[in-house]
Length: 110
Image 1 (cartoon, rainbow, N blue to C red):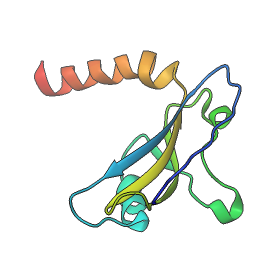
Image 2: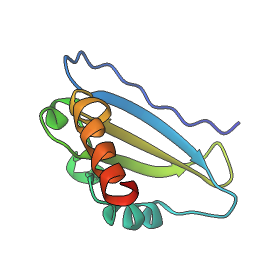
Image 3: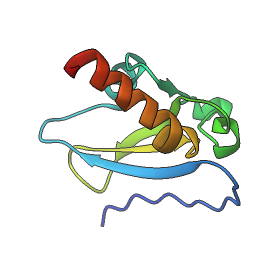
Image 4: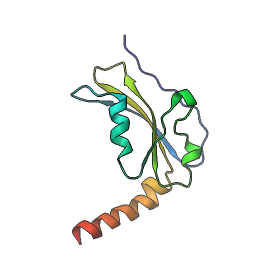
C-alpha cells in the first residue's frame, strides 16, 4: 500500500495553508517542480528540509508572495508530487488578489 501523509497542527490568526497533491500524465521530479516555481512572479520557494526551511503561516503574514515548500515525490501515485503552500489570506486571495486582477484587466483588456 502506497500512502502519503501530511500532518498539520497550527493555531493561526492569519494565513492559509494547503497540502497539495498533484498527479501528472508524465513523470515529474521535485527538482523540476522547484525550478518551474522559482520562475513565477509572486511565488517564493522555501524548500530546504535538511535546514528545517519550509513555509510557515506566521512567516507569510503581511507578505504578498505565496510560499511553496516540502516539494517531494508522492509515493501513493505513479507521477505524483506533494507541495506545502502558505500565503497571507488577507492579501493573497482577498485585497491583493483583487488589485492584481484589476491590473491584469486594465493591462490586457481595457
